[in-house]
Structures are given as C-alpha cells and as structure tokens.
Length: 70
Image: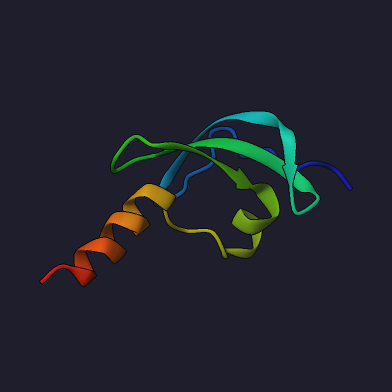
C-alpha cells in the first residue's frame, strides 16, 4: 500500500510538516503542528484518513484539566 502524503493537506487542527521515520499502528507517522498552540506531535496517517485523530494532545489535555478546576 502506498503511504499517504499529508504534506500540504488541509486539516482543521494540524499543519503537517514532514513524514517521520517512526510508525504508529503500522502506518506512517507524520510530524504535525497544532494550528492553535503550536505544539508538535506525531500523528498516524491512517488516523487522519479515518478521521479518528482530530485534536491536539496538548490542547485536549488542557481542556480536560480546565473541566476539573473548581
């Protein structure tokens, strides 16, 4: 199967910078930068294709922590 090229792809949360040498769940991992906070993280191309990875780990964590504050 040909690797999914995400470079330049429009995504609501991420800007895809480059393919990484690592794999996530047997798919090519991409270095992605969050448009909101600038945090860089690895995202699996198959997750993007299926639409199951649509949030930044750092932003999502902060939102979860904010919910728990009194």
